[in-house]
Length: 282
Image (cartoon, rainbow, N blue to C red; front, side, top):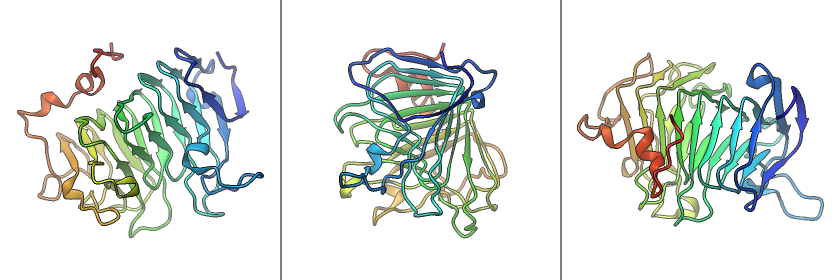
């Protein structure tokens, strides 16, 4: 249990620390803040840079980690020198975030896994994730249930960034699912993309998988909402929407929709079950 306050720390939950639970004791998630300001491009005093894996304020390497009712932030100012600066990276399996705020700019949250052949699952319930460029990304499986996804204004109305950059392995049917969530922003209308397909190191087996369903999309959403990345066309990725509402929602050739007959295969339970039947929802 963490008392209300601002904690300037880098937190790592190591591989042998399974079952860790962190709970903020405040009335709201903003009452307990864990923050630091490491950029991926920042230089270490003994040489080299932190890299994306070294920059997160909070990293889960162990399994079965639960975080509730607090804020995890990377306060690095990207206007100084543009750089990735992660707030959260999840690597271990079966992580739960409940009423937790993730706040940063570029690459706020990386849903990762130990390697491309292992699937790590994360369930995010009633969370708030804020960022601008590719700020929800990686090869992990993550369900965003009843969350607010906030795209912060970069002051570039022609292109204010991308919400997702999934790199789901081609043999994993489940990447990112957003359900009953809200996509909000203070950016210009039509300036925020829903995502683009990330192929780390040109990996042709990284076939992004993202479903946004039963959610509210604000006016900031661009049309078309999906774009190419590093020479890989978005049409080769697994991007789908389903029954979304709001001024940013639409149905067109550039916005693939789930077939209603297939929608039952893309639920919270299906994404999280894995081989062990994990069900943190109820």
